[in-house]
View 1 (tube, rainbow, N blue to C red):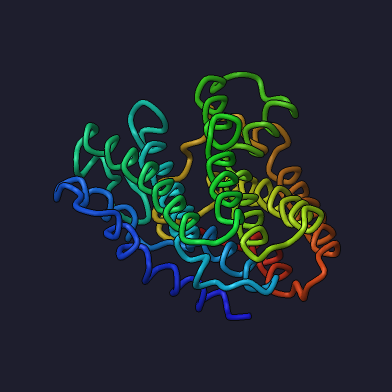
View 2 (spheres, rainbow, N blue to C red):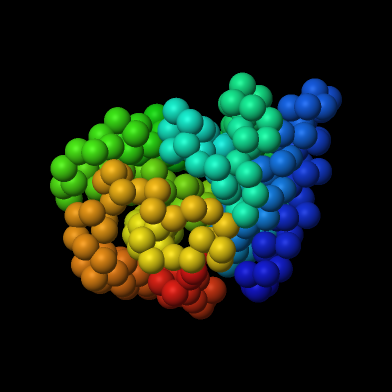
Length: 289
């Protein structure tokens, strides 16, 4: 397997060409889409997809369009999250948010374009295959990003803001708002490599546990993080249903550590060398952005 940086660079270099491969996108729309898509970042989701696929004996090169599609969906969600009607953020990855540069209308369309472009990219890649694995991966992408996945979590995140935090509500929001898009790369990568359902389920379980831990660390960073390192404002989640609101700082930190241990346990069910994903999970606890 390759290093995390190698997978990140592989995805980074492919994002703009993959977007442009869709065809003749209006110039201003393309500019707004690329403004957010090429703003850098960890590229965690495509890295996980490419690594999962290669870990299981698949081709990361063949999986690359799916990895780019996943990152396009993640980027669209950030554009829309930052809008005044949602989180109303001015800063993302150290730069003005999309709507601050291009206006709310074009920011909405840029997000819409990335979502629809992602599904078109995934379906084109699926059609090039001589099996149903690409179609299964595209379905997993749509499901985890959709109305029973990420959008479901975002809905409760918005509509329940200011409510009393409960374990059920906080868990639901974090599982879907964040964890669904970390389950997706594991599921998609293992499907594309031809794994059986038991193996795919173990990968999905890893992504589920890691995803909730990842969101809890985000909750902690909103309270304790350095805005200069994070590239965005802190203290934005005071009214949100977060693990910190539910359990306090120390309780949330303990929950994140326990969830990472659960993610590592899920890896034990995979019939592969899993050092890459073990390190990824452990590193998530000490991240600063």
